[in-house]
Each structure stands twice: as structure tokens, then as C-alpha cells.
Amino acid sequence: MLNNIALLAAIFLAFCAKAQDVYKLSEIRYEGDLPVKVQPIASDSLASSFIIWISSEVKAHFHAEHTEYVVVLEGSGEMILGDSSRTVKPGDLIYIPSETLHSVQVNADTQMKVLSIQSPEFKGKDRIFLRRPPQK
Image 1 (tube, one colour):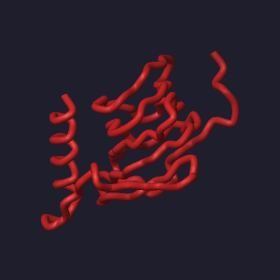
Image 2 (cartoon, helix red, strand yellow):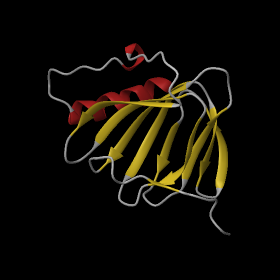
Image 3 (cartoon, one colour):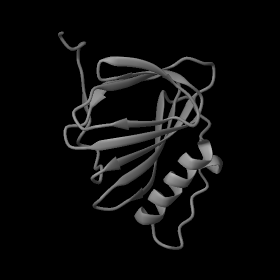
């Protein structure tokens, strides 16, 4: 399963990047103490990709315009996706439609490392954090 996800990620990056760009996701590392660290990988008008390290959590938010795919590369956590909660671990591919509330809480001593692919291009302005939990 992980090989299929890695292949999907590689195909996507091939479309986003110049022909000479090769990304070895397992070799992209971050050692630090930031709660969340984002490393841009490739971007064009159609999509953007990032490696994200999560030490503790990503607070509840949604993207008004963007669809997002997340591939868990390392670590594990509890993810809220819309109205449901699930454990995510390496090899999982999570599809997050636009306007879908999502968050993640790391549930291990090690940080999570994920590949995030967003379409269309993410310019940093389409992330809407909740100030309080949504009313049901």
C-alpha cells in the first residue's frame, strides 16, 4: 500500500515540478521544536505540495477553495475530518474536500511527517481556523 501511495505522490510531483527536479521524500528532514513546520516542495497554478512536520497538533481549520490530499509518511495521530475521527498512520492517504473541517492531534512521542498536496495552487490565504468548536 505504501508503495502505491509513494508512486502516486511521485507522479503528482512529476507534473508539478520541472523535469530535472527529483524529490526523495524520505530524505527531507526537519529537526527542531516548532509545533508545525512547513516545507514547500513544488507549486504551479494547478497545485502545490508541501512536507509538513507536526509535533503536537494542527488546529481545526478548513480551506474554502482548496481540495487537499495528505499522505502520512511518518508518525501517527488522531484526525478529525468533517464529523468523524480516525487514527492515521504511515501509508494512509486522506482526501479532504474544500470546506471540510479538519485537524490532527499527534498521539505518539514522535512527530508526524506528511505530504500535503493542494489544488489549485495554495498561496497561504485559504486556511480558515476556527476560533471555537462548530455548533451542532
